[in-house]
Image (cartoon, rainbow, N blue to C red; front, side, top):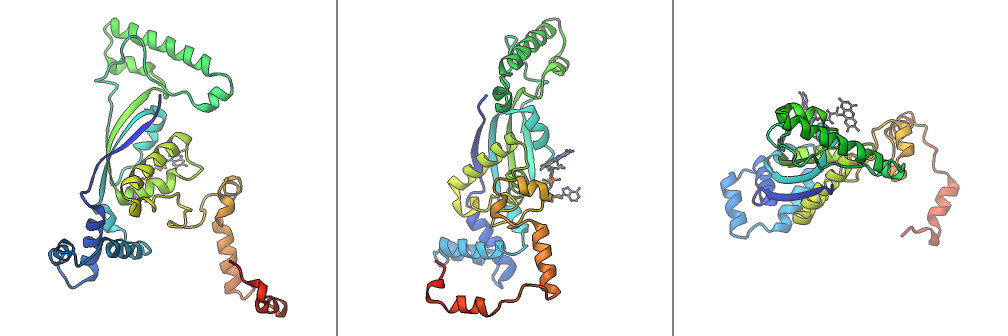
Length: 273
Ligand SMILES: Cc1cc2nc3c(=O)[nH]c(=O)nc-3n(C[C@H](O)[C@H](O)[C@H](O)COP(=O)(O)OP(=O)(O)OC[C@H]3O[C@@H](n4cnc5c(N)ncnc54)[C@H](O)[C@@H]3O)c2cc1C
């Protein structure tokens, strides 16, 4: 089953909302006065976006909670949904029910992971699901309520979501779930949510990165072996290396620049583009 993700609705103008929230904190003007200055064109969108960028370099994150996104997600597995609903702050879920929605005609939609296909086992998995579908139908036909017949359904069974998530929590979800350590389906959904927000609001979408992104922490805080195995690890320092570097600096143990280095610096052809 193909995953679909769509931004259905959002805070009317997130850039304006963020600007008014941040400016209120740092200005003698009231939020109403700030809003009026935006309304009459005294504050341009570029100025608002630049101000927000500066604020986002700091840890002042509470204004991000004032921006929300309403997102529809379909064709995801219950294996994904178990993980998704573990996020508990700044996000509200509505999920298709297996109590009120009965699958029809002895069939339920499901996901077969690529790894199962690569192992040449997709046919066997699908056959097992077909059998489960038949038994599920038999139970329903025998009068078993859907809430009990669903005990047969596997993690692969599909489900749908309608969520509302604020920007702060979406950043946090992307920190964790765009990381290459996260499960593939969650990485796919997080990437699709990122693409949807980016399509509509590139000024905000650019911040939706894994936690090692240059606009997030900028380094990897996973274990060293995971960092070594990560395909993008070579672009990011591991926290252990940062601490080692800091420790060397503090103890005055950094390799000193010597005459040879300064000769290199003086050379005309040394300039790095
Ligand atoms: C790669 C990966 C592997 C995982 N493996 C497992 C696993 O094996 N088993 C398992 O059970 N779970 C696992 N999880 C789930 C994980 O433990 C969290 O439950 C999940 O990521 C939800 O994130 P969160 O706790 O940051 O919640 P969110 O709701 O997204 O939290 C947002 C922020 O609020 C803070 N916060 C939320 N609630 C509280 C609170 N009550 N008190 C104080 N601060 C709070 C959080 O610290 C976080 O900073 C895994 C997650 C990942 C990304």
